[in-house]
Length: 186
Image (tube, rainbow, N blue to C red; front, side, top):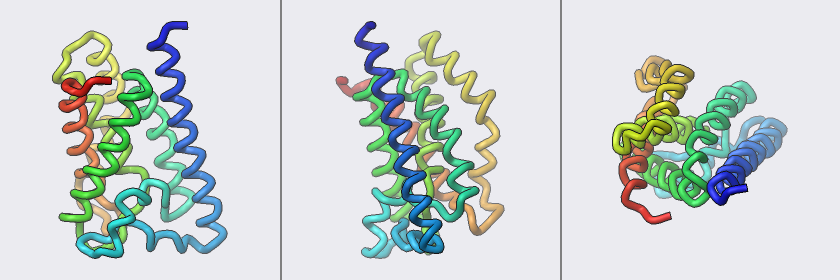
């Protein structure tokens, strides 16, 4: 097996582990009446700072967890095509930068869920295709748009229970990560 293929398989395993952790936390959260929401991002509040790291693991309901799991798996696997090191760097960058932007500029409400990461992966995939213009990156971007292009409606503030700001800042962080990855050594 080639090093690139092994790296991809390792990165996909990380995606599975990430989703498994989300589900384990959701089960405990469900048993506690979804009391974990208070560990989400609370913008411009010192107590909300830990939420920058924790928020992708906490969801408001079983349905919320289900809705984030499949796109996280598929888009995360597309990002994993870059290899384990790039996947980990991209994920950390999206969570930290997107989360910090959300903490700085989001509305004053708890923000939870992995959708910031889903939107970040979406932005990364499109950004990478735009900047590298390789056949593989363009094909992955086309498949991504075909499968998940409709998520851009999540950027519209239609429902006050949905963190459209988290979606927006995740997308921005993903685009920045896709641009920056072209300059980072693996």
